[in-house]
Amino acid sequence: MADIALYPSSKHLLPEGRLELSITEERFIRMIKQSLAGERCFALCMLNEFETHDDVKKIPAIATEAKIVDFNADENGLLSIVVEGVQLIRILSIEIEEDGLLHGPSQAHPQWPEAEIDDETACLADKLELFYRTMPEVGALFPSPNLHSLTWVCLRWLEVLPLEVHYKQLLLTQDTVILATRFLLRLLDTDAEPSTELA
Picture 1 (tube, one colour):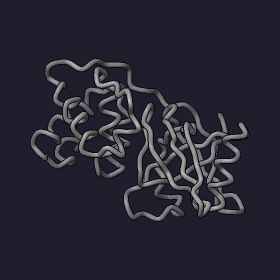
Picture 2 (picture 1 turned 90 degrees about the vertical axis):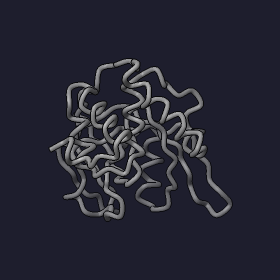
Picture 3 (picture 1 turned 45 degrees about the vertical axis):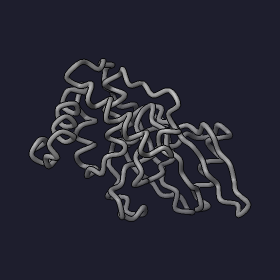
């Protein structure tokens, strides 16, 4: 079990995903410094949009260990980083340090096995490619998108779709990508409510 720092965020990151974050709070600047120095890894925890970052009870068990792939600071000292998802982890407990930084022991959580895009699921890759073209600031984070991988495509959709964290966590606990694939095909084709698929 490894102790890991926790960054609760309403922007979600999953394995092989990339996300740009603006770091303003001192506790998270310290977290970034520790990561760059190799002292302690950190993970992004899923929050629903508009939830407070300080409510420990709302932080779900499954998070994503992240690594920093780029960073810069503007003239006002605002730190901007690009992080990449390394692996899913399960948070076993949470403690709060003096400055409010959350951390706790964690263990690796099983990942979905690799699956390939086929004729039935090609629409998910096509729509993701279109999404990246219409949202170039997101697409720029993926200069070589792995659109042949169903696993990769489904993870990217789960990152960007405005779904309740409960549903995302439920899908991530599955042994394979099958349920997520069925859910996304139904959602993106018919705008069906997530609850009808995941009940």
